Length: 218
Length: 242
Image (cartoon, rainbow over all chains, first blue to last red; front, top):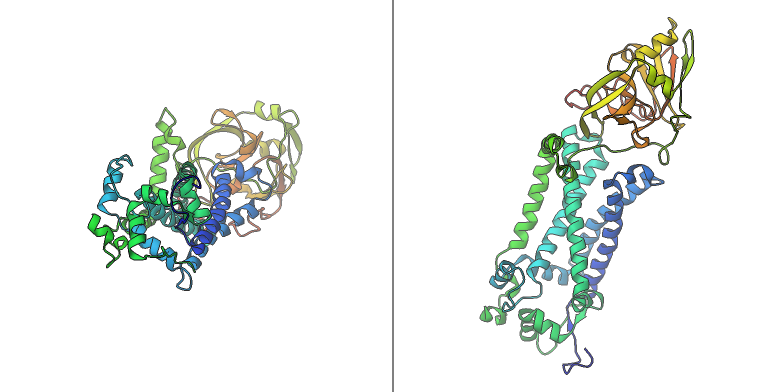
């Protein structure tokens, strides 16, 4: 970027709160998903040294995801996260066009998030809640009937596999677009990235909040 | 669209179809419905997968299948050459059987489901082994012998059966599962299979059958499971019988 004739200022993309929330969750996801995989592929059932301990790690780091997210969005500091959640919720006509063209249509003007990111961000928390609920039924199973236990187990397996695929795809795509990844590591992206990949967002930041493209950093 | 994006009131990001919320709520709905119907769907999937020659359905999540439990670290291992089954306690003639000697006894075949108390079930498992009743007859149970204490060469697991339960035709010492020798993870080379009861009765890595004068609760029974573990009639469960 340094070599490019563009403003030295970079565009703030994610606040510190958002980045902390993201990386705390990334850590908890890594722990939960790797221990979950051990149990999914039978060998974990019998060949891990202390199954009860691994099971407890899986359960509590999994519930930790929900807790961490709940803490991240509270009013005291979660304003930027809630604002982004509102952006993720809404799909513009450009988003729909982008999706219909399978991300090929280069004429669309995307906002802060592309529809793939929006789907990811809607799927992952929903799946995390479903997994936390079904996992709790499986772990504290005494008060549930057979059918409910089996049903929870069934749902847990499906959502577990789906969330693995989703998170894996999320990581692959992040590494294919390092500037986008920088938005989540250092918190800013280059102006050219913002103009080129997220023109509607760039325009919005520069009209609504001129002269300083203010980050809502807490 | 261009006008939309430069309008600041209301914020452009607040406009558009709330697809995110629909996806989110839809998934929570699917999850909830799944908890209540998953048992049926899973059973149904398993039945189809059983007839599916390609085996592709078998790799789908929730399609059932075995889960391997052990109460010690890893699987205890014993070769068929080293293996011994002791039958003793309140009997006239205690004896020890090698793997080959066990296989030389009249075999009993069963084609029955395996139901775990935690919910999973494997349909139509083919078992081959020797009836516990045959082993007891061979040893000659003394009149005061009222129950069995079963032990595992994992050194920890134990189970119990009343004499009446143990003498059923569908209670066997199994050495073959689905046409193959019982593998180590399944409790091989020799395990118990108590067809009408929950899986915890079917001691894996079986090495001892001791006739005792009253029921001594087994490993899981000490931890709250029912001693009479009939499928569908114990442990607060209502599964279809195996």
